Length: 298
Image (cartoon, rainbow, N blue to C red; front, side, top):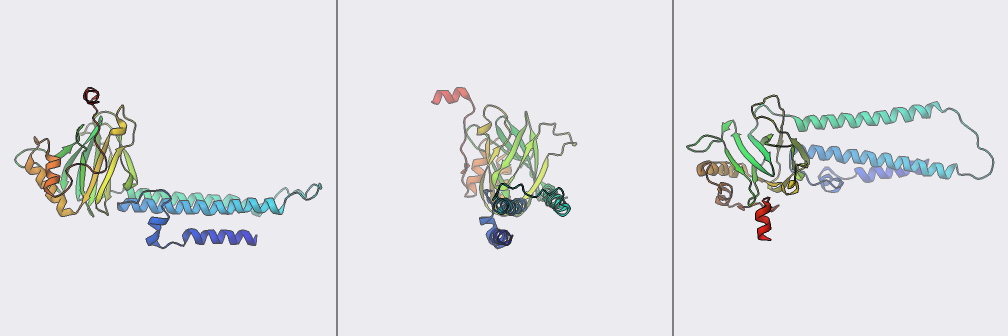
């Protein structure tokens, strides 16, 4: 048992010996690097759940190998039969219950944090999914509606077969996403957010739906977004891009969209280019979902 205790202790030291700064790099266990506050909470839950599983695995395998060595057959004599071992039975009943209760507690706490919504988010964006693309409608920023100059309606961008839609968001500000599908169930997924949520079809006037979530981006950059729910023939090509920028750049982007007006089909690329940004998505490429046009070019 001394060797088993030494093995378990060494494993715990090895697995938990990283500083908090190294944890993101060394203890992600295959997860992408999170770029939101909510992603960091989920990564921490994943990391320490995996560490707990590895420690328990070391203990269990250690006990198995110890028993195999300690009680291996040495003679043909029948070993002494033990009918009950009350202390052992209590231990292997209570310990698993405590482990499950602990995992349940930390999981619920993380889920509540990820699902928490603030009373007044900095940015509200309605995400409309449809076969097989996305529309992003910037509803409000700091409580002020983001309408087109001289026209009604909130500023928006929409993807086409020739242009990947880019969802521009400010770093460090609370963003609320209001999801809506125009046809079937889709799913909003950004791997670096460590988060995805189904986009359910419903009438936008139906206030009983609760298809919303919030996040706060912590790093600038461009991140590919995907539909994670099988929705039809071109599901795998239903991509978008999230581009996180400084708040001042976001303000300028929305203002430029507003000045271009709703009838400018190239408003997304023109607004991005005017700010020194790439006018097209850099993380994914468009796919023409019109089979007649696609076959003509092949």
